[in-house]
Amino acid sequence: MATQHSRSAARLMISPAVILLLGWMLIPLALTLYFSFLRYNLLMPGTNPFVGLENYSYFLSDPAFTAAMVNTLLLVGGVLVITVVGGILLALLLDQDIWGQGVVRILVIAPFFVMPTVSALVWKNMFMNPVNGLFAHLAEFLGLSAFDFLSQAPLASIIGIVSWQWLPFATLILLTAMQSLDSEQLEAAEMDGAGPLSRFWFIMLPHLARAITVVVLIQTIFLLSVFAEILVTTNGGPGTASTNLTYLVYAESLLRFDVGTGSAGGVVAIILANIVAIFLMRMIGKNLDA
Amino acid sequence: MGRITLDKVTKSFGEVQVIPPLDLTIEDGEFVVFVGPSGCGKSTLLRLIAGLEDVTSGEIRIDGRNATETPPARRGLAMVFQSYALYPHMSVRKNIAFPLRMAGLEKAEQDRRVVEAAKVLNLTDYLDRRPGQLSGGQRQRVAIGRAIVREPAAFLFDEPLSNLDAALRVGMRLEISELHERLKTTMIYVTHDQVEAMTMADKIVVLRAGNIEQVGSPLDLYHTPRNLFVAGFIGSPKMNLINGNAAKQHGASTIGVRPEHLRIVPEGGLWTGTVGVSEHLGSDTFLHVHDTGLADVITVRAEGEVGLRHGDTIHLTPREDKVHRFDEQGGRVA
Image 1 (tube, one colour):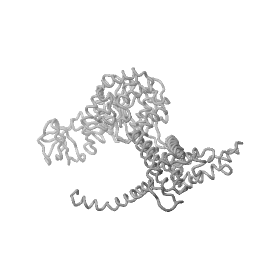
Image 2 (cartoon, chains in turn purple, green):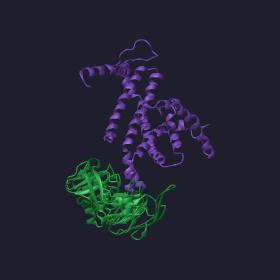
Image 3 (cartoon, chains in turn blue, purple):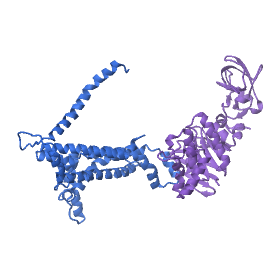
Image 4 (spheres, one colour):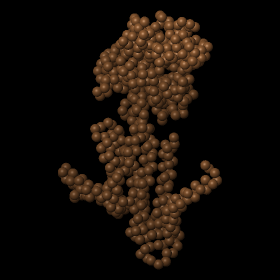
């Protein structure tokens, strides 16, 4: 097979895909890098002079940047904790033989199929609205005053919404992992005198370690770029209370029409995401080795 | 101590009764083998004794105490599983120490017992490895080690050798027998391999469809099988079972003759046939004889080498005192 001829043919065959992919990634990246060094504001058309690192220093010294960093980490960390812990508990429940198992499993997975804007709007208007929301009605029924989630606890509310979306994913992955556990191991542990909690702690949890790693890695990638949920609920506010890095870049370039600073922010976000990725791989990537 | 009594124990899965009422007593220190074809309920029976399955009715007594409702961990039994069921994320040391750790023993005492067990099982050099880095036989020994550190009243083995290759199986068979000699603890061993049953057991329990067909020492079962099923199951190669006229002449509906109890005679034997395949083992030769008019094929075991070839005519005579007679229901005729 691997003659000189077949190898060059293979290269020729995959080149359209490779060129397309490279173009797709490299051109936007290069343009973003280029714009980040220009003073480029859509409100001041005309020349776009080269300004060096000015955009970066402006973006990084913006007080909103620190807030956005903290918010991003809180959002990612909070959702990860809720989905992993909740996912393990739900997977434990779903692993039991119950009547209507199939229907219950589909219901659990359902939130994952609801697109982010829709689910955020549903939460905002049907649950968290301080006048018409279900939670407001519930509070009223209990004789409490309604809590305005999105203005009193904007970031926590968004963490809740995003967790609700990602919980099914974590549950699904952890459930399949749990089902792959050899039942003889659990029986052996039972014979060895391990109670239900010990069996969970010493046998199940180590078995789930790899699946948990996968959940954490995949979710981190997606959670760093949460955007739609913020846009349709709080618009990053009040102030910058629920602005994450993605939303800050959007605000710079499309609300303040400052393409240069927005691009600088984008580059900073890429670098930060990679730093997070490196740390994650260092910390838990060893779980993925066979 | 490890005297286990089953009193009218039954087990049903839904509508299906897999174990009809069953009585059995296992004496302290005995090596009992449950043997039978797959699906005969022998593993279920073991799991009932272990407590991993609940009995549907009846009573299980361990050392005289009713243990029917006792959870598995408090029955004082240790089990070795077919898949070994080692904990893959723990080292061998931690695997063996696990039951001790669960029992809340002191760290020093745990270490002492683990080291002791490892010495018995030749695992000392492997204590810090993970199960994934061990061979099949070593994993098996770790599983046994995990069982012996608990110093249980009885060991339960669920087809422990079926995942090993033939050579290793013979070795482990000896090691387990050796272990029994040394520990003198009750052992209950489940297998579908009658050779394992014959070589290891003090007492064999032959099971079919949840029923006990016969209980006895290996040689009891070999010499006086109580019915056709046991006759066909125990012994290798299998007993020749012959129906029809030849059986009637012996006053039975079916007669059974073991391959080693057929003599090859030069002329005028009772039966005549044509030699088919012959299997030469060196020490013995197994001849498959066709066209005898008795059964499809009659197996003959001859000592040493035999000068017979494929297609030759052969004359056979059974040793009359070794012919087993069975009636129409398959029961033994004395």
